[in-house]
Image (cartoon, rainbow, N blue to C red; front, side, top):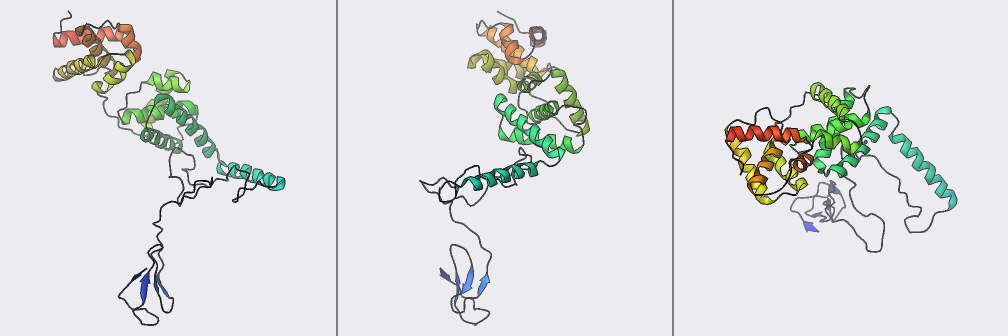
Length: 301
C-alpha cells in the first residue's frame, strides 16, 4: 500500500491509498473507491503438481486459425478442477457440448472452407520449413481471395498453395512453384493458373527475386563448399554490373554461377546435381552458363 496526498471526495480526509497489486485508489477511512481501473501486473501462476493452466491470458490471435483464435474451447479432460474423475452422465453431457461447440464454429461454408484450407497450409509449413510470418501472410492472402470469391471453380488446395507461393515471393523466400506444388500434391499447372488469378485480382506487387538469395539453398542441396558459394556470389555480382541477368530466371542464373564456381574450384559436381537441387533442367543450366561465360569472358580451366 502507498499513501497519496489528495483528499477523499466523500469524507475530505487525507487518507487515500493505492493497492500495489490491483492499482485501485481508495479511502482507508470511509472505504470509497476513487479509481477502479484494475491492472493485473502479477506474473503467471505456476504449480509443479497441477495440470491446470493458471495463466492470466489466452492464446494470441492468428490468421492461421479459421476463427483467428478468438473462440473458446471446452477441455477434453474428463476430470474436474480437483482432479476427480467425472461421472458417466457428466462425461456424456460434456461430449455432447463439445460436439455442439465444434459445430457452432463452422456453421457457414466460408468457415468450413477456411478450416480445411488453413489445415493444409500448416502441413505445407512443416514440409517447406517456412517461418510463422510467411504462413500468416499466406493466410491473409487466402482470406482476401475468399472474400473476392476467387475460390469458385477452383480447388482449395490449388488456391492455398498459390497463396503460399505468393507469400514466399513477397517475402523473397526462395521456394519454387514445383516445391510448393509437390508439398500439397497438386499439378504445377494448377498452381500457376491460380497464382496468376490471385496476382491479377488482388493487385499484388511482387519484388524481383535476387539470384544471390538462391545461392545458399542450391548449394546446400548440392552439398557444395563455402568457397564455391563465395565464388558464385562474386560471379553474380559481376554479372549484375554488366546487366547480364536481365530477364533471366534467378534459380537458373544462381545454379549456373554455382556450376562455374565449382569448376573453378576443381569440384566434380555435375550439372544434373546442381539442376536437381535448383529444381530446373540441365538445359537451363547449360544455357545460362553459356550466357555468363560470354558476358564475363570466363575461361574454364
